[in-house]
Amino acid sequence: MDLPFSQLTENTKKACSCSAISIFFIILFILTPLSQFMLTSMIVKLIIICLLSYTIYLNYEQGKYMKILSQNSQSNEVQSQINMNIVCNYVFSLFIGLMILFVLRTFF
Image (cartoon, rainbow, N blue to C red; front, side):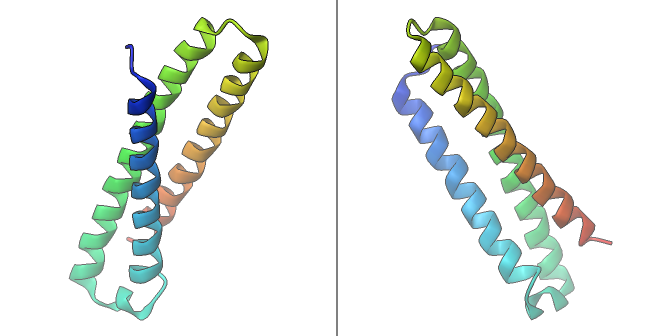
């Protein structure tokens, strides 16, 4: 698993885009009167769940890669920064998981 840094930044861009699109759809189709259209709302909710799940997958893959980078790091400062990024990655994944639960709750 020897990803170049450009691949790591591309995955970060994908995760950010997916989460931004999901938040836009949540606001548009769950928190507005557009939620009254049942079929459209259900389809968009499924798309939101897929996007958020993909974001969690990307975060998981980046976390694994950052853990490898942390173990291979020579400097203590760089290692502590990477470890902090890993913790932030887990916190971000937790909040994405909470958003998935919020969307699932709107089904019922």
